[in-house]
Amino acid sequence: MPPRRRAGTSGIEPLPDALLGSILALAGLSEGPTITLVCKRWRRLFLEEGSLWNRFRLVPGRTVADAGSWLPCKLALLRRVAPLVRKLTVADGPAGPGAWQLDGSRGGSSSASRQPSLAAVLAECFPPPASGLVQLVISCAAQALPASTAEAVGRMSRLQGLAIEGASLPPAPALGALLGGLPALRALLLSSASAPLPAGVVGTLVPHAARLTALELSTTSAALPPAGTLDQLTGLSCLCSLTLADGRQGASLDPLQLPAPAHFPSLEAFDYRVAGLFQVAGARMLECSWKQHQQGDGWLGRPPETAEDGGSSGLPPVCRQLTLGGVLELPSLAGLLAALRPRGGGGAPPDSLLLFACRLDHAALEGAGPQLSSLAELALGRCLWPDFEAGLGALLALCPRLESLTLMDCPQGGGLPACLCSRRGLRHLMLPGTGLSHLPPGHYLETLEYLAAGRGCCFPALPAAIAGARALQWLDLRGSTQLALTAEDVALLASLPRLLRLVVPTERTPSRVLRALRRAAPRLRVGLLAPAPASA
Image 1 (spheres, rainbow, N blue to C red):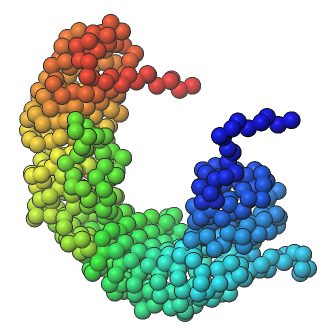
Image 2 (cartoon, helix red, strand yellow; image 1 turned 90 degrees about the horizontal axis):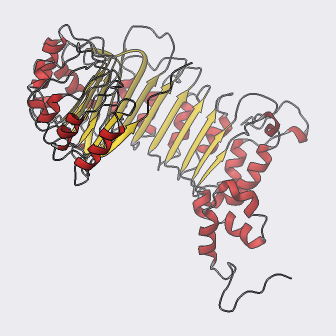
């Protein structure tokens, strides 16, 4: 006999439907096959829980054995939960016996071998205009987007976001008709894997998708539209975010002319990536981007929180970050910054500038002072100068508010440039790949809160100059595998009043020294890193 329930207790059955549904949702979709077999009520609540079915993926199974059965099972589930779906992702999968032909065709002609078309699925599960679907992603890597699907999508008037990724895209007239039926559309992604973007597609966007706020155009095996064509995009007066990507292998070295972001009325963020070269304001490069993000959400090289009150860098709450990569020719940094600075958000200059694999020239910096006046963060990675120290000094002189500096893979012969040692006001300094072996004294240490000399840096002993970093809170010397702390180092570290975190290898430091350090500096957290295992 089942055990008697104690008086005053109850099971899960009396819980209200809303509460029980929320509890079942915590198990996630992966537990659906088990939960739906418990009882009819659990099955009903699981299939009616909106948080579980807000997004639905109609994609093939992972194995060949799944290929023949995934579509009927998925479609049956979609029909049941369609009223709850707000974002639908559809993929045809690789060509094969179980691949879904989006136009409804299949190898055989018998009714048993027939599959429903995507157009039929959309019409059945999301009938306009009552459909609650607001985002649709269609990936047809093995085939072109069927005309029937384009027509069906064009009738989904409540769509706010649409992504079409395919071997080829619909022709411009069909795309125009599709977009013309989507008055609420605000975000659009068009990606072609093996064919160029259809002729006239850019001109189609301006009259039929004038209220777009986010747009991405990308190709994998073909070029973006030629010079002059993409300039028509500046007619999208509401556009806030733009991505242009050309992923061709072995692309021509003739630069593609891309529209200057400053010519867009409302643009706030952009990302340009070309496998060959593109040109903006006379500068030739491989990539550039402008992003706005919250403080602390930037690139991976930004230091962790260091301030005792929980704050991080001196960047503003919303940081404007410009990244330039693979710049081969730069006539004028001032001219390039003026062309790249978006007008949305007030057209303010960048707070953060990241330069990677760029060829820089001292003359190109002339007149760039006003554009860099508010710069708080600067990162240089694998950049080439005719005279690195002179170029870095000239660049630092243009950035009076700079607080965070990263020199990545810029060998300095074991030391630091004099222009950096005399710099005042730095709070964060990252030096990966610089080959640093000794730390010179200087004004740069006076306000430094975070110092990282990791990969490629090797100090044989704790640098004595650290004694001048009275504001230091975080010291990272993980690259110094030969470093062994001594009793004198304990006294030096304990004399730093604000030091909270020390990252060092553990191999050579005696345990008695570590115990002495913990007694002398009880607030200091010592992150001990074990040596990396030797490769076979």
